[in-house]
Structure formats: structure tokens, C-alpha cells
Image (cartoon, rainbow, N blue to C red; front, side, top):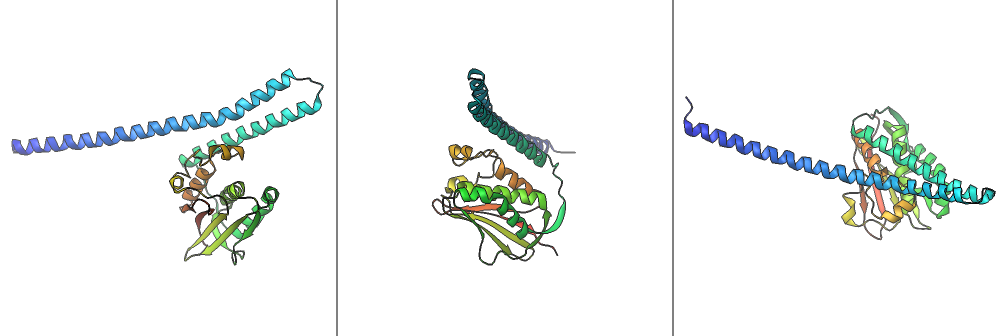
Length: 261
């Protein structure tokens, strides 16, 4: 037989645990709801800007002289640029959804990441030249480095980080890649000589749509999802990603990859 005092103690203990668990669930629901509202607000804001621009260009075309070919071409090009931006936002949102629902499938292969970086440098050299930015490897880092990963996805990671470094680098500065062999990993670093990032922003850099400088980032045409995609890709590989930065001293984004056995 259970004593009444023991039974009462058990009931009180169970009720107390239920209240604590319920409080935790309510708190998590509130956090999720806040996250949902912020996400929907961010998506709406990101989509509204190019849509508003497209509407403006179309209205201008409708009211302008149809025989003015130069003017028509100008506004059609502007509208096309904003359609492309819309397409990029939707594409990135689809990717984020796939990553967060576990739909990302990796095709792991052995490849030379140095060669991949050189190919990306070739693709972005015109953009870098516009700001007189030098694309380079850090001393001794341009030799062959083999890794085991999804080459297409890691190429996307590198493209995001290198383009960010170019966009935020100072005119006449440099973007440098460092490749450092560890025991079973390769450490990859993408560094720029830009304005750097205040410590208050570092913990949130990889969040969706988070922007340190909202006006400047939008002017570069980014979707605000690039670093979040980078994080999801590397986490899917079971790897780490991070950033070192301070104001006035540039930034270094780093991540790890597995080396072949």
C-alpha cells in the first residue's frame, strides 16, 4: 500500500514537472512564432523591392513614347535585372527549404579544391578588376589540396564567400585564400581587407536575411541568404564554418573539409 503522504508528494512532483515542461513548450512555440513572423516579414520585404521596381519600369514604358527605342531598351533592361533578382531570391528560398527539411543529397567525390578556387577566380576576375581587387592565394597555399566532398555544393560555398569578399573589399585591396592541412581536415580561409564587422554582428551573420549594412548589401544585389546557404551546406557535410573579424581590419570566413584517407 502507498502511504497518502507519498502519493501526495508524487502527485505534486508530477504536476510540477508538467508545468515546467508546459512552460518550455509554450516558450518554444513563442520563439517559433517570432521566428516565423520575422521570416515572413523579411521575405515580404525582399520580394517587395524588385516587384515595386518592375512595376515602376513597366508603368514608365506604358506612358513613354513607343518610338523612343533607346528609352524602351533602358527600362526593359532595368526590369529584366529586377526579374533576375526575384528569380535569385526564389531559388535561394527553395534551397534553404530543401536544406532545412533534410532533402539535400550530397555526392561525395575526391577533388582538388585548389583547382576549383582557380576556376572561380577566373569567373569573377572581371568583377574584381572593376574594384581593382587582387585575387590570390596566401603564401604556400596554391599547391594541390585534395578533399572529399560534394564538389558542386562546395563550389557554391566558395563562390558565395569570394563574391562577398569582393563586394565588401576596399578598392585596390585583395581577396586571399588560405588552405591549411590539419590531421584529417583541410582548413579553408577566405580573407578580405574590407571594413570588417563589429563584434555585435558576428553571432548572427549566418542567419537568413541578416544584414550588417542593409543599404549596402542590397545595392550589391545579394539576396541575404548566401551565408545561411553556406552554413547549411557545410553542416550537411558534418563540417564547421565561422568568421573572424573586427572593424577596420577586414574579415576572414573559414570552414573545414575532410581530406581523403
